[in-house]
Figure 1 (spheres, rainbow, N blue to C red):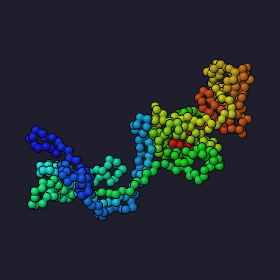
Figure 2: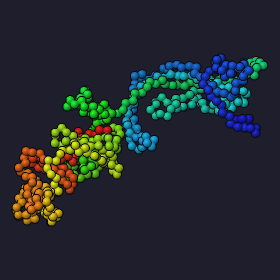
Figure 3: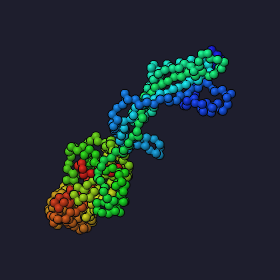
Figure 4: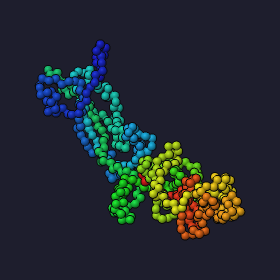
Length: 430
């Protein structure tokens, strides 16, 4: 409200707004228990005079609306939200109850000029109603409403006015459709992997079950997203679509090659929750069917979102049963000093082709077959592992050059655990 126009003291005046009807007790408090106290003006007071059930706006009373919500990751250290996806929730909202609320607003003025100025600023907003928003929470489906001006009582004075010059009060009555809502039900999204019906683990070990209680109590989720395949190469895990075809899993000794793909781990994991570097795990079912798992903690690759960096728990890997080999070679195409380092005591090679005494680079006495492991004792090369004689025992050996571990299946050498894992043979634990 402005001061008198054209005056030197023209200024903007704030009009306070307070809730409460002008009851006799409230009036006594405002007047400081004195009959000579003059109330300040201008002043706006409002109060609720009616609350009625609004049957025309009634909808299905038992309707439940479900909304899926995904948060952005919050970093408590920086107190900022990051660009990655955080926890996911399911919100169940119950149908609110419709009511129509009646509000009465009393505007207290000391003169007619004040009344005109205040009224013209308020009345121009209602033609015939004003849309309002009670909250900026987009999950609140009752936040939008309208305020309708129903009637105006211009003054509380009567004719004749008499000798008292009381403060003039004019009243505006508004109608507002409102909703009374029940609390929403919030659920953290997750996928049921197993039902734990006992405090003991599958082997009846209570100690192990208690140690792994973080998983049993449901604070961690275990899932295989979208039936995707994964390709484990060294310390990297790549996600591939279920129908993408590459070399069969662990079916040869050839190191696997990463194929092109547009599957990004942050988008995959974000559908279920948040990956916690160094805590979240990836688990691979042992490809040789002995009901064990290869387990490692994972983190996003900062240079390429197609990969997860894995730190494998070496205790879950198969243990070598043979001494490591220096390389896997074709003995007919290379030899000591001829494509390979000069012979030295302890050198070991896994050979891919038969070799006889005509292979002069290896000496006159060595005779070996494909898949054998040969070793140099300082004087001669000899067969340290004879594949044709090992037809019952499974053996494991590591190639020092590539770092790959291989498995002797009693008929051939194959990769021990690196390679392709189809959907259902691996899982993430967040």
